[in-house]
Length: 245
Image 1 (cartoon, helix red, strand yellow):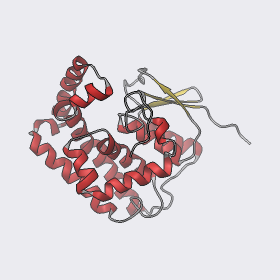
Image 2 (tube, rainbow, N blue to C red):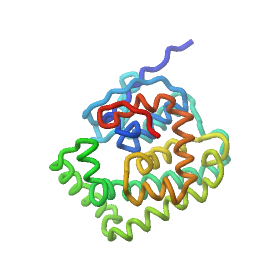
Image 3 (cartoon, rainbow, N blue to C red):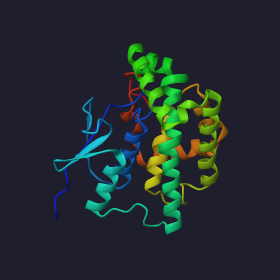
C-alpha cells in the first residue's frame, strides 16, 4: 500500500464568516474535502511563484493556481469527481465554471474593493484603509483591462444579476448542479457564491444570493453541511470563533 502524498495548501488565512476571503481558496479546499484527500494548511502571505493565492506543494512539487492544482491531483491520484457526467454535462459544467470565475468573480471584486464593501473590510476584517485604497486602484486597473471595469456601477450589477440568475435557473430544485451527486464544478461555484453569501454584507450581491435567488442560499448551506462539518472552527468572526447562522 503506497503512502499518502504530502499536500500543503497555502492560503492567506481564514475569513470572518467563511473559510477564506478568496473564492479560489474555498474552491480548492472544498475540492480536497470532496475528493477525501488529506492535506495541511499553511496560512500566511507567502505567494506562489505566479504571485497568486491559493497554491500547494505536493511531495515537494509546487503547483500554482487552484485549477492547475485540481487538474494535477486528478491526474496523479486518478480522481474524477465528474465521472457521473456525460460529455454534454461536462461541457455545461466547464461553461458555468468559466462564467463564474472569469466574469462573475470580477463583479465580486469590484463590489468588494471599489464600490460596496470597503467599510466592512476595514471594520470587520481589519484591512488598513491605505491597503484598501491600493488594492482598489489595482482592481480598477485589472477590471479595465478585462473590460468589465469600463462599465458603470449599475451596468456591472446587471451583469452580476444575470450570471447569478443563470446559475439559479440551471440549479433549479436539484441538490447540486447536476442532480443528487456533486461534481468538481460544484466546488468552484460554491467558492464564488460563498463570498456573496457570507462576505458581502449589505450589498446587492448578498441580497441576490440570500433572498432573490433563494435556491442559491439553500445550495450554499448544503455544500457547507456536506463538506465543512468543522465550519465554525474554520472562521474567525473578527477573532472570535463562532458558528454561522
